[in-house]
Image 1 (spheres, rainbow, N blue to C red):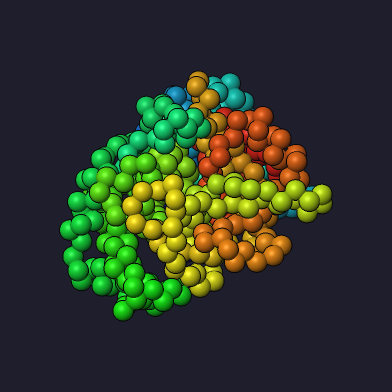
Image 2 (image 1 turned 60 degrees about the vertical axis):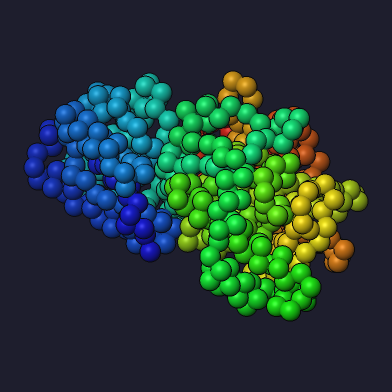
Length: 480
């Protein structure tokens, strides 16, 4: 069911020359098209029909209204008949929301035996949309063009991808990321220009001392800690030493306090994404592992080692994929299987891979982590479910932000991994390991990504276009 809290307004273009009878038919047919879009499961937002536009003033006023409406994430425009494109100039000058140009018509088939001039006057989207597209191109207006009838599964899939990208763009425009500590010392590809990110994305990236969140963690109410511990015991296979009466049960209570404290800290500041840094625990008893995992499953973006761009991507993936089956998590490419014909990538991280990537029952364990100060951290251990997925990273090229996307197939590992105490995913890039990895190296791809099974690569291409980011797809169709 479409989310009525988010809307896309549907704009139909025409002109007064045709007379009221024809304009009434235009309105009727465009309303029927909107009803068809709203009935499509592929489209997760409400499509709101607006009265047919025939004047420059009406177009400009409607676009200004859309710009100021918080619930509007984008606009779809269709020139049903012939809408002279000069009358769109003033409106397009003030356009601040993403635009999809739907090049369609009311009928699927031509009624060859009965076509007359009246039919031709009414059904000339081929004329009106080309005029409109010329003006969009002339003015440098970024948009997605979708061609075909609204009953086509391909058309609905393309519109659905665009609406999900519009949700992502809207989410990033109001997102706050909280950094607990700074970037990992001496690391390059996770650093970057936070001012440029806010200019391009609208996302604020603010830093708070780790000691401040540690104080909130230490003040976690015991009833909240008990409730989370009970949830862990019910939902996961908890190692014996962590269970009540076990030798390390207090450590489990500590991570429950961490989860409550970090979530509380974020919510009080309106933040939906965060980063940690194992070099700066600031009073936290252990590096947050379980909290990072579970908060991703609850919709919060996360990046390790100060990597705020990955935190942004995780939150975007979760927002754009809302309602779909699957999940999204931060991910790092760790090591390869280089057997010819069986190449694969084992991705993981020290602790923080999100459980949205699996439907299996994860195991909750505690293990030493020598490079991290503090107590031995607790984490969920699982294998990601086999699925088609997208791997996306964002890198700062100095003069621009670059978004890099790769289609991958998550598969079962070739053999069990009984000695690896982390959550992990094993995948094969498409079309091949060598081609994709060579392209990623040439593109300057980061070692951190978001791994998402929530929708395909087209959503990310649409998002890059909306944000005016450089888009490099390393595999799959060259969308966008």
